[in-house]
Length: 184
Image (tube, rainbow, N blue to C red; front, side, top):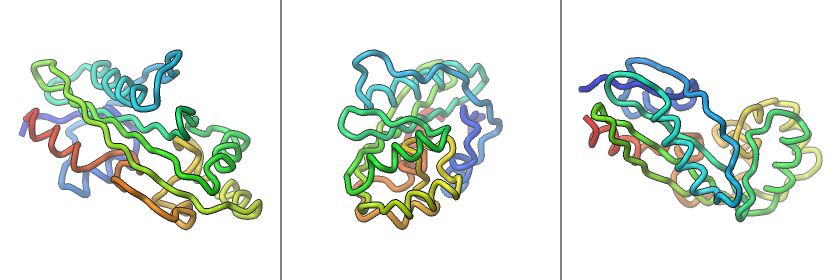
């Protein structure tokens, strides 16, 4: 197999790749500005960021990049960095269905880039004040799109999920495997 470089420092993405028997030869975190462009939809933002990450990393072989965007309608939720951001995200998600868009981009050795997008609908129960505060105290939300990690404590708030569970964690495995195989 051709050399594979993961353009992400996410331990979750590494673990997901391992789940399907893929071990990157190298990890090089792509450092790009992730600010949405004026009028950019959540879907297009995820695709653009994954593509930019793949193109930014200079390496021999295949470069795999991904980006996850959580949205309520056209409103893009942040990767929560403060308790206030996490609280605001959880209050917005409480009792609602939101969408998680995870785009995957693979840059082949010849420089061509192919992308795929997974869209997953996730419904949360109505969260009480105490539930929000317990989740904030866990600190699990730090750096997570939408202020939660579905593979952790937040799983107890999910009432319905339509789409790819692995995509909500950060890497849609079906789409990723197909892109890697196609670029090899």
